Length: 120
Image (cartoon, rainbow, N blue to C red; front, side, top):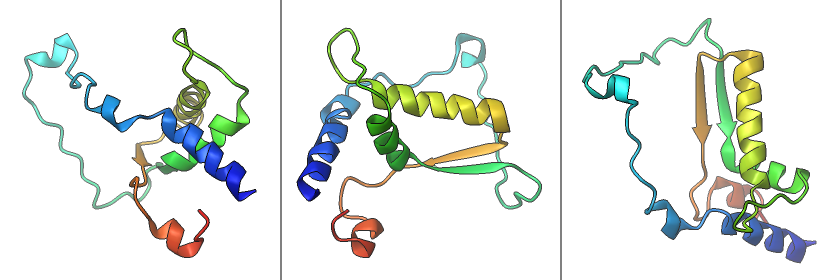
């Protein structure tokens, strides 16, 4: 069982090679906002009455990777995790219309989960 889990984790991690992240283009504003330098200030000190979602992103990615049948892009890479993650995000936005959504990601190193469950 542990070997299968490790193999699955390796397959999931292979979807997100760290060296490719550095090659992504910078995120830019849409042209209609490019001229504006207005910064949006968000006040998180009082969230009462707001709909707030905190998403355990890596957990969701892992779950949808294994829940959705194999899907590949034109270059042969698995895209089922990306598809499922995006589908679930869109579902949350359309059904719940949250005021805020925080997407949390684990570090690639040991985390509190490993302390709770060493085989994680």
